[in-house]
Structure formats: C-alpha cells, structure tokens
Length: 474
Image (cartoon, rainbow, N blue to C red):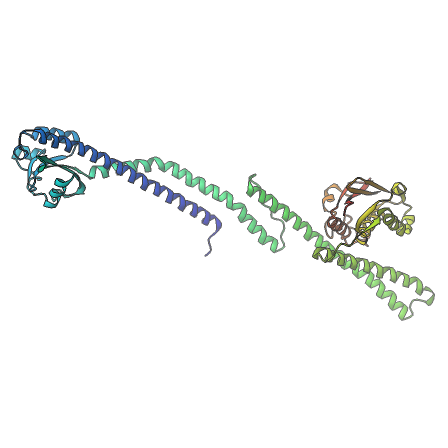
C-alpha cells in the first residue's frame, strides 16, 4: 500500500528529529561522563601525590607505617570520598583507610594480593584504569603511584572510587534532561503534525479536484488559507480550473453552435438543389435560389476556413512573410469590401478620412485578416443607423489603431473572455449566425506573432472599442 505524502513527510521529519535528539543526549552523556571521570582522576592523583610525597619525605620506612599513618590517610579518604590503601612491592596491603582495617588490622583490601603486573606498572610509571584489582566485585576507577626511596620503589599508594556513583549521577542528569525536554518535545511534535497537515491538505484537495476534472466536474475549488507558496499554488490552481471550466463551456457551446450552423446551410443547399433537379423550382426562379445556395456555400467556407486557421495557429504551422505595405490602403480596401453591408444598415463611418499613410512591415495577408475580422465585428454588432469610428496614431516605435462602434456593447463580466476560443458574446444564434466564436482569438494570435497586442473596452448600450498595437520595426 503506497504511503501518502502526509505520512512520508511527517514520519521522515519525526525520524530526523528523534535521531538528532538521541545523538544530542549521547554526546552530552559522553562529554559529561568524561568530564566527571577526568575530575575524579584529578582528585585521586592529588591525593596519591600528597601521600607519596609524605612517605618519601618521612624518616619512617613505608612498610613500617601501619597504624601511624592511618589517621592521616583516613581523613584524606573521607574528604575525597574514595578508598586509599598502601601496598608493598609484592602486592600485599600494608595499610587501608577503611574502618575494618582500623578495628581489626585487616579488611577486604588486605586479604588479596594485588597482581604483580599492576605493581610493576605502577613502579615504572603512574597507573590509572578501571579495574577490580581482584578486590572489588564491581569495576572501580583506580589510580596508583609508587613511593620511591633512593630511586627505588618501596611501596605503592592506591586510590579507588566506585563507578556506580558516576553512573547514578549520569542517569539522574539524563532523566532531568528528558523530563525538562518532554514538554517542548510534545509541543514540537504537535506543531509538526499541524504544519504537515496544513502543507499537505491543499495538495490532497488538488489531487481530488484533478480527478474530478478528469471526470468532467469543474466545480471543485481549493480554499486559500495562507499567502505563502502553497497559497499561491492554490490561487493558480483555482485560476486554471476557472479557465478550464470556461473553455469546456465554450467548447460545448461551440459544438452545439457549429452543429446547428453546419446543419442549417447544408439542409438549405440540399433542399434547393433537390428542388432544381426534380423541377419543383421553376426555371425562372432557379437563378435566385442558386444565389442563395452560393451564399450558403460561402458561409460554410468561412466557417471551415476559420477552423483551419485556428488549427494552423495553434500548431505553429504558419510562417510570417513580412513585407512593407501601406496600412491605410489595406484598411480602405477592407472597408470598401463591406460597402453593401454598411449601406444596408445605414452606418455612419467617422475618422477614416483623417487617417494618413503608414508604412508597416508585417505579413500583409495576416494583418488583412485582423482588420477584416475587426471591421466585420463592428458592422455585425453596430446598431442600425449607428456609427463606426476609426482612429490611428503613430510614434517612433509603434502604431496604435482603434475601431469602435455604437450599439449594445459587451457586459463587463464578459470582457475578459472575448478573445477566448469559441466564445460568443451574443448567445443567440440568429443574432450572430455567421460566427463560430473564433475571429477574435485568431486576431489576438496573429498580433502576438507580430509582437503586437489587442485590448477591448465597452460600455453597455453605448459602445465597444478594440485597440491594437503593432511595432513599426517588425
């Protein structure tokens, strides 16, 4: 069973934190233990040195100072909290600071001879180790120094301290550390859990929303609960979902529209052709109906051409073929080609006579298509006896062209979608039956290919204006 991101992230970070904490405790215990042992051996060394110096400077032979040395050694042992005893070079204990030796002249230290190997090690150099000396049941910290007279070792002073107090102290320190760190650790794990949950929840919701979108459901949105990178991702995801939902809506609308628009002219063409063939339509009226058939064929051709243009633009198959031409001449040719439609709707044309010649270096055919689509839209949506205005400004780097028409206008909430594929501001097929919703998308794509741009402004029941910018150097 695959692990979820939440579990992976939470347990990975938890493992790292636990490893770090355990490593810290281990390092702390090692450092602290070494410090305590060092301090203990330092104390034992000072004590041994004091005793050996006293024995080396006394006139008594070390082997003869049994009870005379007891009180001195005993007080030092009590003060230092460890055992002190003196042995001869054969390993026999001569004097011990414990109470048993004082009372009976013997103790657990004196019943066992210290090994010859240890005595030899002390005689040649100072000795420190953790050992039982065959005296203790548990290992002790041992420090020993030899008493020398005339350069020869005559006795050995041993200091022994149990390791249990150090271990007990270390255990107490670690327990105190764990207890004091318990609350911060618990808080840290709760904080880690909450942070991990907050980080992974939006990703989980995005995964669920993506699966829903794959099924065609674009209704899910991601709550934006922060302004960090995750919040930005949620905002971008929601914007993408909105765009996909809009595109899907436009696609469905396009399929419905194009199906209707292809079916209607084909039915008309088929009916009139069949009427001519079977003689239902009289010979005197055949030219009239053939004219209608011709218009319907041209309408089908325009729709197919638009769809092919979109396909080429999206696949990158078209290549710009720039040439120098007069933009005013191109504009006039487009307007003149629409003279009949302009006269039919009694449209007033303004500003065309004020436009001067402008040399433009661009793909003439594609720019012609841009202007044609804009003029066609203006004529299509201008009100009867309305007005179409043309404006042109030029500076040293770019040309700014504006075409506006009076009329119904575009609702403010729909302005952002007018350049999308398949989008139609007027959902009524009868009001816009020659449009497939691709013209403005084609215009935007062509202008972007030339390094230009297009924008739209509109006020309902007043006007709609399209502004294009084209660089003169292209």
